[in-house]
Length: 411
Image: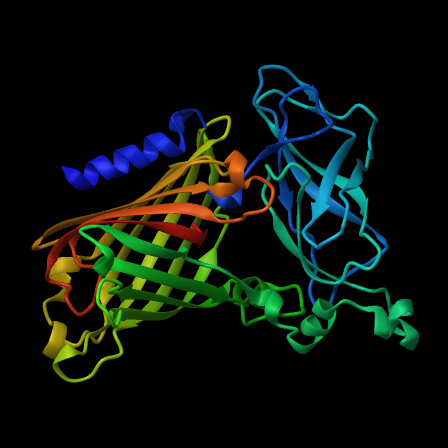
């Protein structure tokens, strides 16, 4: 089939060794200081507008080291950390040795270790922190000048603009990515099937007291996703349809399950509205109440598998214009993803209704891993294959086979 050939060719061109090499929450990387391969995960420091990290001061960061070898390994004494701010050189973080200078990581186990690092002078606002080789996960932190510097009025003239932006928008640190953000050009059957999607989530609660209320409220999120279908083949390039999807959900990111190869477990329970913003006979509207558990497994050294089945019920579905929507979309979506956090990732969705099944495959690869773009382009090459009932609300009962190719900011 023509579409399948496109997908297989793209897979071969991007990475001939997919299973040798998207699960961003569990990304790992090798430490610069370890002779053996000792991957680690960077834990975000506790920083916010109310409690920023101080520029020019010492702070501690936490790393989770995993020993995948059959023998004990020594904890690295140093790691190199990089900040996303322009002109900031990487800095060295030193291990905080509490019990002994020869802390060991037992075979097939992991330990939590603290490292001391100095926040670069002049670093203010929201910045990304990552290991210097950009192989581990990145986390966002909020930094500001220490209180003594804040009191120095003469210093106000020398601050970078992002510092003032962070003062004007103090809640910006509560925003984060949600679903994939992409722009795709229709390849087969053609440019009339182009589309783009934006998506983000926001944590509205920041409860100060350490208690049950804090643990509950700070796991509540507001989210918004918009998927628009763009006919780039027509002279006027009209939007054929759009899906507007605001939602609210509770997200528990750690169930504490202990299973072989399982490294993460959680669940999401929420309520989502979906409509296409039209009126009359073209109007489409529905609501979902859903629950979605997630399990993340480590397959091998840097290959992860995430399984996230989602089930829902329809609430106040518009029976006048899309009364049979459930016949085509069903009541569940089996989402799986497998890949290398620093390489190729494949995500799939499968749902089944009374009228039949629908499958979607999303393939992505970071462009900075390609020599031509290495070191300056933080985008993903993104491909999508959809076979089944239309993703559009307007034509939800129409079957289609679409292959599209483009770029993504979030995969």
